[in-house]
Amino acid sequence: MSLPPDTRADLDALISAHLDATLTSDAAMRLNLLLAHEAEARRIYFDSMALHALLLWGEGAAVPRQAPLMPMHTAARWRSWGVPLAACLALSAALALVVSRRPHDGPPPAEQTAALPPIIASIASSQACAWAAGTLPTTVGSQLTSGTLQLITGQAVISFASGAVLVLAGPATVELESGKRAFLRSGLIAAEVPAPARGFTVDTTNGTITDLGTRFGLEVAADGASTLLTVVGALSVRPRSAPLAAPILLHAGESLALDREGIASAVVPGDPARFAVALAALGHSQPQADTGGEYCVAVLADRPLGYWRCNEDPASGVREVADRSPAHHSGSMHGGLRSIPGVPGIGGRALAFDGSTGYISIPHRPDYSTLELSVEFWLATSEPWTHPWWPGDAILISKDVPGAANHDWSVIGGSVGAGQRGGRVIVGVGVQQSDELLSSPTALNDGRWHQVVWTRDAAGLSLLYVDGRTVGRMQGRRGAINNPLDIEIGGGTRSEGAVPGAHVAVDLHGVALGDRLFLQGALAEIALYGQVLGADRVAAHYRLAATSAGTP
Image (cartoon, rainbow, N blue to C red; front, side):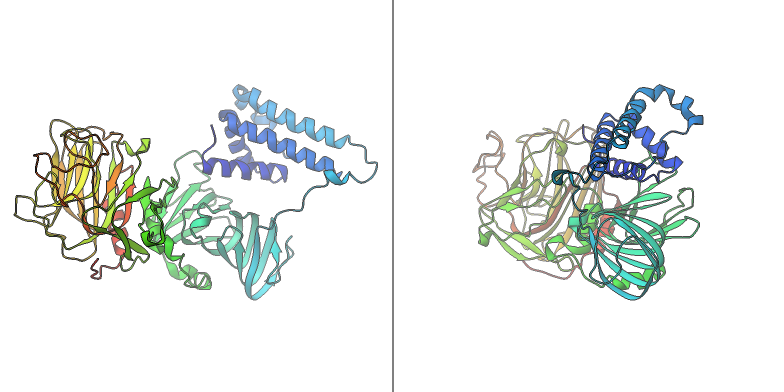
């Protein structure tokens, strides 16, 4: 089984430090723990040691003495892990011995010459910079491999191959490790990480900071203590004092301090003034329109199972709706759909549904079956919506199974009573005995864009949010929502007595559906989460988007 990305990144850094003879005692203990408990970590370690030895063999280089992974006075403590650790260390020693015994009888064959190190970054610009003796060139435009930059005064902008941009403010020392990783020894940086570079990591002596697609500031003091500020999006922070604990998630506007031992303070509102000069050097560039800027970053920071922005233009021949989440699980367009301007304040595009044939289907995935669930989308429509549950007037987003209490859910547009209190968004949950309903208290069919969020926890509590505020609450029955049918958006194709997925012409009562099952309006920024999205996150998403009027 492959290692989680964070664990793999940590392992790579530890192995690199071991090979460079810079492994600290704390880092050696972390490496020992990984090798003792993870078979995949041991395999990667073996491969790295073998590759390292072969490279040295090819170069005819002397083998540097490696810092021991495990101090002798602590050996008894690790006796139970002796076999895997001894195996790893034995291989390292054996390979080093082979290299040391290589006869130095001339240059190595051409085919054994090591490749040049990869270019991982460049110096994009500098301002009043004075540099100390590092290992990398410092002129503007220089292409950089892995190595160290030491800035005495001034400010330099480093552009990474991954797309990340880092502003270094002197005095500062930073080690560039790869296109998506750096080690800040001391000083202040500001960083901007677009979507393609998501996962960019900055290590310090007291922790590891992994970016989730954002803008942030980081300062490391001379004594090793550090201060973090998330400006946009979110950061995953793993303090050195708790390497095996769940990381701390730091959202936009929040700050966190780590002392020299890696012990974290409480999360507090941040002070952007501390990083103002470095942040200004990043400019005000936003991610490309397709990423949705700060709104999209915020959604992705909350780990959606799926995120369909509806940016595509059907007129161009595209019939897939891309999933911007890490799952990349796209949906399919059906019937009458067209592209229109997206939600003001978010940007991008939206999809308008024709009210009679247009809908989107998302194939089922196992992780869509869950005890906890959150559904988020933006809606604009002027339809009357006068028909009650079921099927109302339009399916907005649904994982419906024909009949009641079939472990399904639907969010539709309709009325609370026949012909009365129309224009409502209604949530239906079918777990046990009968469907349970939750409705918005006011109409949402005013032609303006509205944020709609529904959450359900493992105890059966459903909450409905409109435009960032809680508008409805329902304590339902417990039970998993675990049917295997597709998610349908903007319209539906299922009804009582029909084969799931087949088009039908009547509702549960035999009344002709006509175009009542399909939305005449627009949807955008549709996200599905496998956990309850908290009220603070719902409100934060809403604040990032404008609420100007817009008619589909």
